[in-house]
Image (cartoon, rainbow, N blue to C red; front, side, top):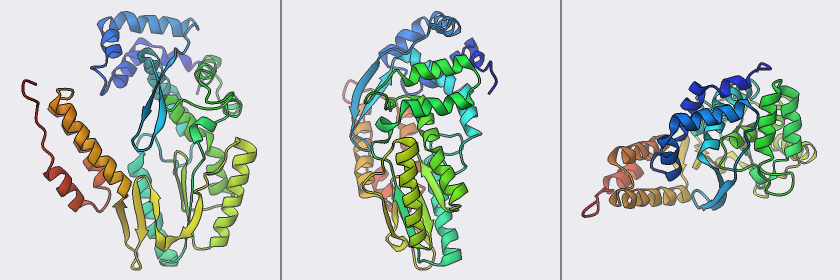
Length: 349
């Protein structure tokens, strides 16, 4: 990143591209429609506020989601989402990509859940080639991760690496715009929060890969999985991870963190992975994920019937779900689900 990187996020072209990205799947929302009615004027105003240093984050709209689990989401107004898209696409993504380890899987171009699934599958196969079906798995995650991220720790690390004072001022504005508790917490609806959350645990990644030299490790946001032939080795890894989280990051591991035999398998990214005695890696959809999938299909049927979605929207969402299911051993489930699902408009719709 150069000392003048800020200029790239505030160009009209990049703000327009960010608007097009931010509106995907939301073009019928009232705030998007209102913004697009005066698109050029709104973008120029946003550009001017950014360039003059008077841009500030607006308030958050809070709502509850229940899929995959109940949690509060904090959503920005539409203009702020455009700024976040431009900031992430043009500045933060290139900046963080150079600093994160390869097996930090979430939210990155060319990675995501498919990458995380593929990496754990490859690690299980490699473990079998070296050690057979015996061995151990450490599965860890952070207790209340997003609400627990410490602002001072995050900002101190960012200030050491970001040379552009205007970029840093914008990041401070964004980070300080939300507090779960005083001095802590990132809003889960922010695109920037995803990048900050990936970056915040980088010291743990470095500990595991560079100091402890554990080859079979992958992380998706705060979900961590390590494989090893020796349980004692994983116990020492867990001790050091727990210590570093507490001392340097002010984080606490979830009580569900545990070391279990590889033969028991492991839950990761909505799948249950297990290694057969012959070395085959089997991925089955977790029961809770099946329930969520059926509920999503039912909700899509209702939305289509009410005229909230057009057929291309439905096909896009079905294709996304089907693509995820194809990553596991699910052909019977897919045939059952999609073979029985019919989309019809309500009469007069």
